[in-house]
Image 1 (cartoon, helix red, strand yellow):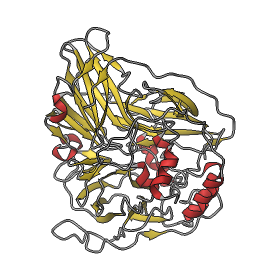
Image 2 (cartoon, one colour):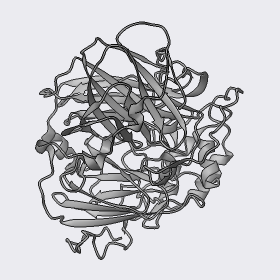
Image 3 (cartoon, helix red, strand yellow):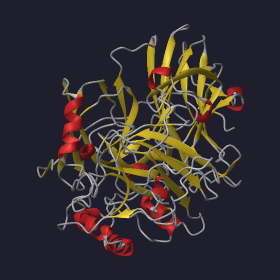
Image 4 (cartoon, helix red, strand yellow):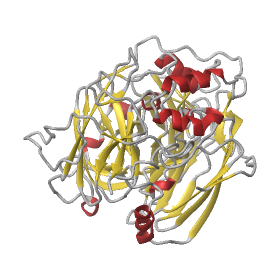
Amino acid sequence: MHEKTRRAVLGTGIAAAGSGLLAACGSPGPHPRTAGHDGMDSNAMGAPARAGAPARAGAPAEDAPAEYISPHGPEVAATEQRRGPGPVRTFRLTATATTLDIGARKVASWAYEDQVPGREIRVTAGDTIALTLANNLPQPTTLHWHGIRLRNDMDGVPGVTQRPVKTGATFDYRFTAFYPGTYWVHPHSGVQLDRGLYAPLIVEDPKEPLKYDKEWVVVLDDWLDGVGGRTPDTELERLNGGKGGHSMGSMGEGGERAVKGAAKGTAAGAAKRAAARPSTRPAAPKKAAPAAPAAPMESELLGGHAGDVTYPYYLVNGRSPESPQVFRAKRGDRIRIRLINAGGDTAFRVALGGHRMTVTHTDGYPVVPAKTDALLLGMGERYDVLVTVKDGIFPLAVLAEGKGRSAMAVLRTRGKSPVKFPRPKELDGELLTADRLKAAEDVRLTPKEPDRIIRMRLTGSMRRYDWAINGRPYDPTQRYPVRAGERVRISFINGTDMWHPMHLHGHTFGLPDGGPRKDTTILRPHHKVNVDLDADNPGLWMVHCHNVYHSESGLMTILGYQK
């Protein structure tokens, strides 16, 4: 393991301010292909394979089952060796409790280096990332590298690929960033993601085919932490009736005990321990939150209910619309905008006033270029777009889909004075979703019948908050088995009345009919999406909903490579 016991040090930093205002407007078993005409496995509804109890107290839950490849096994090391070591790029992130200026107000929260988003991590494909995570939080934490196809023991899932990083300790992450693209980092511990703990990760292509003058990295977020006494933990308790979370990293200083307890299915016991702990965060300011929208959170685009959480603020690069970030350019500049949805419970509709966008990538992988007025991003999704800048001042308008609120940033070629913008017509214009895109030819999956079909039916309801996969809430001892070299089809079937952005760690999958390569896909209520992937990265990998409140309430599982 890479955990150290020396005391972490605090970082520094402050979010930059801007100007302007946007007006409100199954059996996953080892069966070969047995698909019928709809491409679904007729024997796929049985339970996943179940591993034994952990071999030793405090060890990650993956250590015991001998039939599965360990994240720390020789197969993982051999795969990394084939990628080859590149030039080493060294970084440090310090996670700490801090006060953040989000434009409309200051809030007590947690962040990396005292800023939100955290400091950008930028490397070139083929580089070796060597990053030390220092934990100054009052709870254990980890760092997950969202979208990166990296070695399994660096994936940052507590209780599966590593032990939680204790308060005052550090952990050294080291791996080759082999694939270029737009990615990001965040914890995989409880609902920590819905604080200020996230940062963009950009892997540049040394043979970049796109031509552009400037680059703008844009991180979108929904915000409640430190407002009106609310925290993500109290919100989770409100939603699931105090049942506690299923993540290994959400149990405070008892993180290692929580690994053992969760492996035995003792979620209720973990919640009891969590309730017995004193408060682990600074007192929130007493200023009241903005009033919640009166209308229900509904979106036809998302198939009905838009989300479970009403947020007082929505942010672009850590700033509310009262004091947005400003990006400056010259008329005629060609800008690459990298969009990242780091929200906990919100899909965002994005448009640049006065411009059409050309989509070039989604989730890090190139697509056949497509023009559009607006984009829809579910939590965890990323899109790269190109725009040629006109002369003037323009809002990058961000609508919290179905929630009646908005955020913004400003693109301007001249002037400094604040501007109040009307709602850009592009928000209501042509809207592009991932199912309308095609993968670029050089990254398109070679057509092939699947060797294995895994059926994952999403179950649960908003009323009971009993989210699960195939009726089974997350248990780290369960596995959906695959073998290296297989073409695997995951059939996501949404049997719920809620939309879910489903995310797979350590891999990309292809959407049907030559669709884009992605790691996160929106699944609308009572719809099915078949995704295909090549099993080429051994280990134990999470599959989960990227609504952090759904995943922490049970909507996640593990894809395990068999020896």
